[in-house]
Length: 172
Length: 82
Image (tube, rainbow over all chains, first blue to last red; front, side):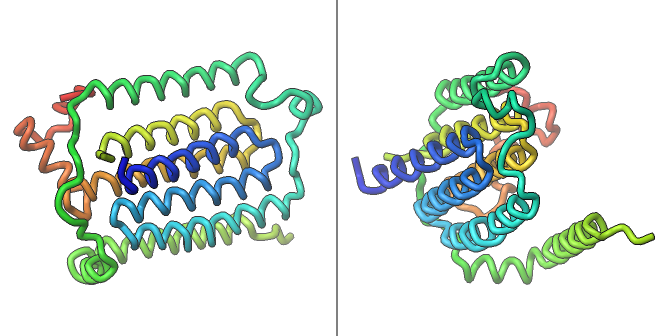
């Protein structure tokens, strides 16, 4: 067992356990904090995949910006618990009816995906070296992919304007 | 030896956890967090494929698929395994 394999299993286990706790946790604040842990583990996996740019972006954008936004909204709404008394009493993963059916659907999806991945041909080990250095990405982004880059910027601008319009206080 | 399949299976597990979260939870914030889990699982798949195919974009996947089937019609790729 090489050190790379050991690191893969450690990061993978942290990501899976943290994600499971995110959906099992009843307090959204804890959920958000656990998701930051999951994203940190994913960032480690990106480093193992020789994609340092994605790893750093994962930390800065996801763990840094988006999760802070989530925490802000949770605290702004001041609604740490689920609505009804029944929701308070019974743990989310133990409820009967359609919710349990949904969990079974997700389990079926997992079994199907793992079956397809293990029965199929081995897609092979990683060969060669990764090409995703920050320098390469920057150069590609501003030469070959300049147009998609600008289109993405406009898309994000539209989303920003949409958010401002949605959050605007109604004046009458 | 960690192969591409390891990463794909890890990604499948994370995606299923996200799906379960969307179905099971009745809290909009937690549902959004579950969607984030799914998005990141897909992201992990992209990065792993990019590393395995030695390229920075998904076009390499398209080239591999074309070499296999000699077609670019998406309906030719309905099999779940080779």
